[in-house]
Length: 101
Image (tube, rainbow, N blue to C red; front, side):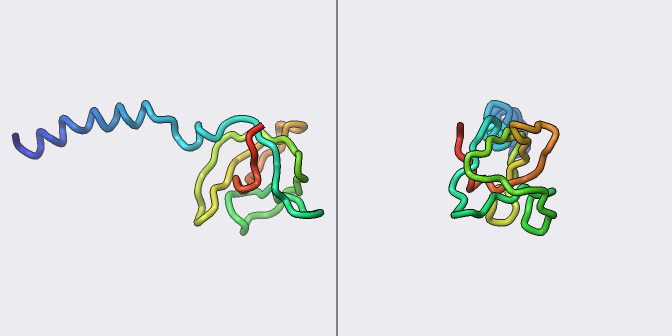
């Protein structure tokens, strides 16, 4: 068998496996609670996925958010969320502070 045939045969199998596996974004979708924020501090809801983005507001422990998707930026996974009490208010938070509800 020539190498080009192996590649042609393997391509559909790889595509099928990719389509059957949920993406990281899909795996994180759902309702989460902010948890693990120390003391009087708050989890920063940011305009983008990283600490260099503007802080929109602070979320205390117990705040409920709806995760739309997550992505990795450096060593941190950032999740695009909307607030439970204000669905139009969206931003990014570190997934380290989210607990599945």
